[in-house]
Length: 419
Image 1: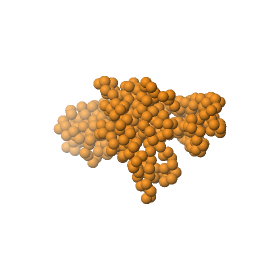
Image 2: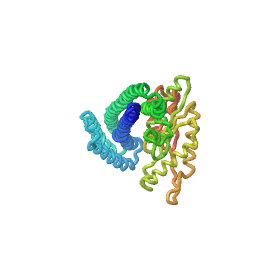
Image 3: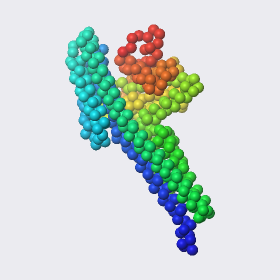
Image 4: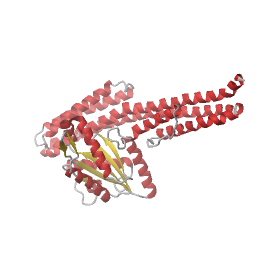
């Protein structure tokens, strides 16, 4: 009797053990993807932003001649140098191609840094043709630095795709394995097979669906599984991974990865139905002063308060994400440039007129600069739309901050020369 029961249940035991092992293999593969994104992609994108920020003071100095740009460049220069050193010292970047790209970017940055210092040392640079020529060369080296980092970014993305391919392969082998064992279980133990298949196959399929959606970049998907066993813990872990990538941990708004996914989807939808939508880029002015005055906890509180204030000014259909640092992006479906400008002006005016929050009994006043680009009026792809909104934001910054500038203002009929 015991032998018969063992023979009848053996396929189901193998099925259960195999499904858990295979599911754990999928989870390990996904965890590798998350660690790679956090450990390699994020430092590269952060360094790109630092390089672009470091390019601003010499440009601002050439246009405005402000002496404060020197100290700002010194700080950004040190931060950029430190980031390059950290990348070169990191054990995550051991491959020859990656180190070659880091060294190439560092070399271009070194040349740009020297040119930037020369420009900032000039007197009355706005009247100097030599300063303009050096600035052109400076910008070229900055562009080559960012290009090398972009290629490094793509190298890392290729590694991530390999990890995702591994997860897909494991998922496929697991499916074949489960089908084979399940067929044996039906032949040898039909009754037990029906009962146990409902408690094993269905949650595995739910996990497979979650893994597939997650690997495709849909971080808003959640596996619904009300269980306290291993499958329930796997589903909870998978959902936790998705939440961490979908939302910015500091402000609670969407992360940059989720923003890019939503922007792609909105672009596809707008093309399909012939609709328009707007992209709003918001950047807090002089945010570094907040960190210098109140420390990073105060700066973090300011970012959270700003994100909450912007959310209150948006519709339920709008999507706000933290794009990086103190910069936020808002996708506004079915919204033209005039309606987007009205919303941006309301956000800007409200921030300029009312304290953002109180820190240690002191009211914090801040301003924000905004850039607007509208699809398909200003751009035909999501990348071009981001570039157009960034260009408008840059124009708002150069024009004195605390302003809203649309890309159409810079390029439409009667537009003034851009920065």
